[in-house]
Length: 116
Image (cartoon, rainbow, N blue to C red; front, side, top):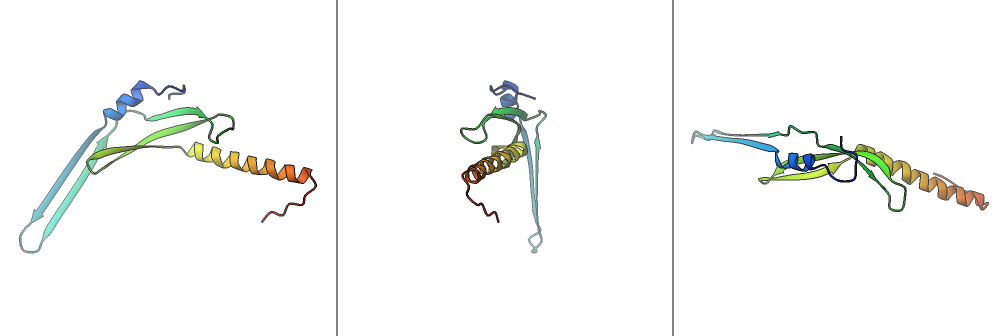
């Protein structure tokens, strides 16, 4: 798995080596009976996961999290996007830590905090 900040050339090349295969079949017996079949297969022989060391909230420390490149074929083009469960969890944890820090400042100032 890639861990440095430069994107691994193998990952970039592997996105171009993705093979897409479509099989579309249609049948019409001209008596009202129609059949349409669409079969799509994508072959991706490479692991498209890597690790980023990036701040998930601007101004906060960097956090390491795993990212996966996902893809789908839409309108005869391949669309790519990044997904990361670890980043989502890191965002939630850091947001909660920031909120807790702000609440602690109010409590230190002698203010009463009511949480709902």
